[in-house]
Every structure is written in structure tokens, then in C-alpha cells.
Image (cartoon, rainbow, N blue to C red; front, side):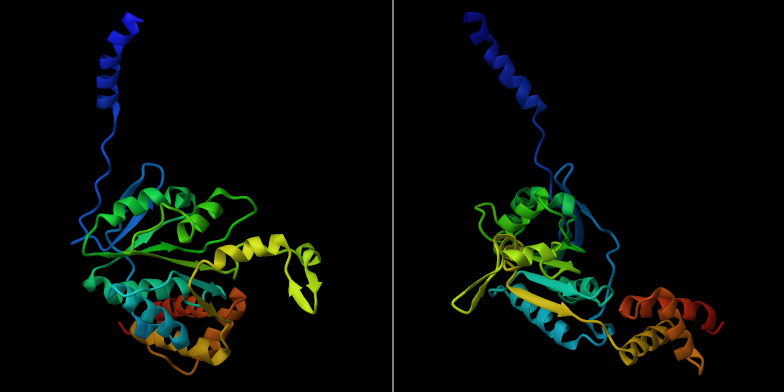
Length: 282
């Protein structure tokens, strides 16, 4: 017993030497965006964040207004909500988040990119961001979807509402997904639905899936665009890239969309880059 007691101070000293210091946060005066690394619980600066202007996002005026208004409230220190952007792929969900960040970065807004693997470590991230006085942070989770029983599902659900280790007032979560409720939905789940007194009561499986998306205060939906909108976006980007737009432009743009099997803002941007590569004056 005496020998063990004599060892305790030496063990304490050894543990002190092995203990790793808390990772330092980036210098937010110069760093406007960062990526959260769950492996070592650090924020890695993104030196060249993609810049998107709100004026360049066409055919989503209602969506822009809602997300911009919520972000403006947040940056001004007023109450604001977490945001879930869902709907058609390539419709501008991720670009809209990047655009509002670019608009308000000079006012202290910072963007933190988190992938699904980093969700269980969100409490550690919130601790780091809570000490950044004078700055506001959007935790950005892009293209989010869950399979059954993934650990990140419960972590995000708790972070949004219900955990003591939730974000401080200077942090909001913006997420994008092609799924409204972030998880696959199956026909068999409809069999759990009950009808009582003329009212419809969804089953437990459906209620559980809806419970995550319900924790986002603002839902913003994106829908498939029509041909005219697609062509207008393609023309806008081709012009911005310095290309000439001639009589064959629309036909080529529609053929490009047909070949991709989609007609959306992302496909229009990709076509415009291809067109500009071959039709920009020397």
C-alpha cells in the first residue's frame, strides 16, 4: 500500500506531460471559413472559400429572401433559427448558404463546414466557437442524409434541441439535403398510421424521422425548374464568363441538359463553363 501511494505523484506528473493542450481556434480576423476535423477536434482554415453572390442565383428569389432575412437577424444579434434547405438537386441550396456567408462575412459571420462523420463531436466544436467573442458562426452541413441507426443522427438531433451541450447564441446550423426528413421513407411505414375519430396519426417510425427535421426552425424548399429558367441561368453564367451567346446557344444548352438527364442550376453552370471555353473571344 505504501509503495502504491508513493507512485501516485509520479503517475500524476506523467499524465500531465501526456495531456494534450486544447486546440487553438483560427484567427477569425483573417479566417472567414474553416472545416471541422472530428479526428483531432480541430478547425482547419479554408484559405480560399468559394465566393457566390446572391445576385447570381436566379429563379430562387423566395428562398433567397427567407435565408437572407434569417441570416441578417442572426448577424445583428437578434433571435434567428436553424435552417434546413431541401429539395431538387442542383437547385442552389449549397450556393445560397455560401452566398449569404459572402454577404455578411465582413460583419463577422464565419462559416464552419462539418461532414456527417463530424456530427458526434459537435459539442467540442460548440465549446470552441463559444469563446469567439464578436463573431457569429454558421455550422454548415451539406448534402445531409441518414441511413437507419447512424450515430450522427442522434448527435445532430440533440445539438439542435434537447442537449445541455447545445450551441451558444453565436452559432446556428444550416443544413442541405435532397430529403425533406433527412432519412429514407418506406411504404411499410404507412401501415403504422392509425385513424382515430377521423384524424390521421402517423406511426412511431414516421414520427421519429420527422422529429429531426422539426428541430429546424426554418424550412426552405427548392423545386425543379422549367426550361425557361434553365436557359436564363445558362445565359447569365455564359455572359458572366465573357462568352458570346449566338443563335445556337439555346439548342446546345438543351442538348447538354438532355445528355445529363437533368435541368437545374448546376447543369446550367456546367454548360456555361463548357460554352465559355469554346466561345470566348480571344
